[in-house]
Length: 441
Ligand code: PMP
Figure 1: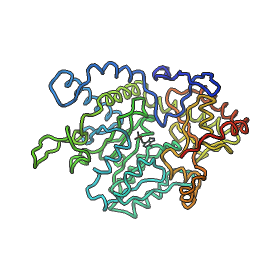
Figure 2: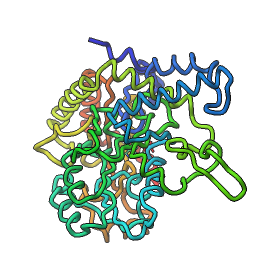
Figure 3: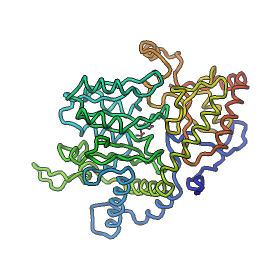
Figure 4: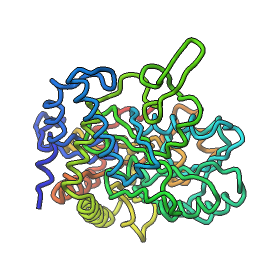
């Protein structure tokens, strides 16, 4: 077996506590961003003397860079089993940019098309659709999981005008996985298309877009390199070439055209048409290297290991009185490695601060760019939400989130849960010590 911890940089780093002592840092904030693989850093170092502008010259370095960049595109497409004949793999900045791009390129007659989003989306898979399309939201069940009956109801209601159903593959709040292929089958029966926001799915489980022509296939998939052991600045949008062959690109400029006169433009074929300007070549090569390392580990192994870590953490946390866990209490398992919680009587921002300053444990707190989902899970009615917006003294709803990467360990979970017990035992002390910590804005 591979020692996964050795594959990632900085995992044994020490950080200072509030008393000046140093402890080994624990990073339980992998849903935000993962540290890079050492193979990725090495590749960046090795490639640096060689990189050059791509598709722009006949110099040796340019040719080498172009071929590495295009090879990386192939590696990325293969990783999620996209169809090389049908699909194009477009490199962008991140998941957010990928979704924004698709929102401009999906249909030319925006206002006439319906997009069904869900009540559990990251803002990045909600806001880009608003004001361009008619948007409706698929409801959740009482556990915060997607309600497939409501999806079918809405597909029937808008039959013929739904252009797209856009859902997260896994929630960045609860980690809940959506049955993407089951949903795709339903969506295709109603002649609509499906976009899967894979930001929280692709780093954790094997993803298969499935062959075009099968009802289960995924039409569009987006994800970010910085959540899968490569640096910031590279995102991926995969979808049918036909979507991008028609119309003008959202961004125009160098690299997007085959021929230009002052009154004529012939766009290049996708993906080049959609990648205006000099692309992030190093970032793309870094992502392909991260994927090679994930392939070497095997995504099935990553999935199994992270499932075990998550079940272990859930079991330990659910035995602690005063811990509030959210959502589905019976099927904890059906999620990626994300667990949101609160400690009764201590605001979430204070818990996160104490974990960091007193334990060297990094977590995230707040609403995780998914405010409607948090409001739903915390059962905050809409009029109450609106009242709080105008009241600067109001409580800020939110949760603490832990999220594991493939390099985290059971012993880190033990350290974390013991620390949580200590916070609860010395609640009064910590509440006093951290009373002046600013709540989130
Ligand atoms: N969707 C989900 C589910 C996410 O978790 C995130 C990142 N938190 C995004 C979209 C946006 O990703 P990025 O910031 O890389 O654009």
